[in-house]
Amino acid sequence: EVQLLESGGVLVQPGESLRLSCAASGFDFSKYAMNWVRRAPGKGLEWVSGISSSGGTTYYAETMKGRFIMSRDNSKTTVYLEMNSLRVDDTAFYFCVKLTTGGPRGYFDSWGQGTLVTVSS
Amino acid sequence: QTLVTQEPSFSVSPGGTVTLTCGLSSGSVSTTHYATWYQQTPGQPPHSLIYNTNTRPSGVPDRFSGSILGSKAALTITGAQLDDESDYLCVLYLGSGIWKFGGGTKLTV
Image (tube, rainbow over all chains, first blue to last red; front, side, top):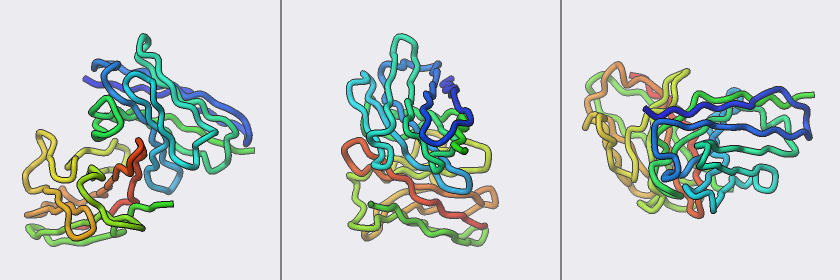
């Protein structure tokens, strides 16, 4: 059974940095692209970033480009999202999501339960 | 910035047929957008109904079907059941590894 367990969400102040982690299990991690998707309070889902199966290619939504960095460690079956210069509107639940291919196309077939990032002064 | 558009809400009678659509704020949706449809209930992760425009994952009933209708991706539910009352979400691949979610359609049965 695929399991995706996010961690690292906390309350931070605007301008600060934070790193989220997603520990994966139950599938051959190194063969699949991974993504982060978020849901802000009262809003819909927003795709944040993606990374190829090898980790060699990353993709970002326009509003996150230059501030967020996604990476993965296939030996630890874990993906990371480093978030810098956090803004109040980055407040959201962040979900780790598995793609059905090595990237970048396919579809999102497995989701974690999410970790809450709150950016507030 | 390109937006993915969905009807905010829709209503269908039990046993009826409903078609929900997923469009782009600029341009037409085609098969190259690999439209995916999800059913989402509160507190649960999205459940895949259709991927690659018109392919059902195993276990999804055949009363759910996907297509391109005109300039939009479409999800058709035939023989709607009370259990189908839910939020329906589409997501499109915009190229270069970029995905975009629609705002979702709240379906009332």
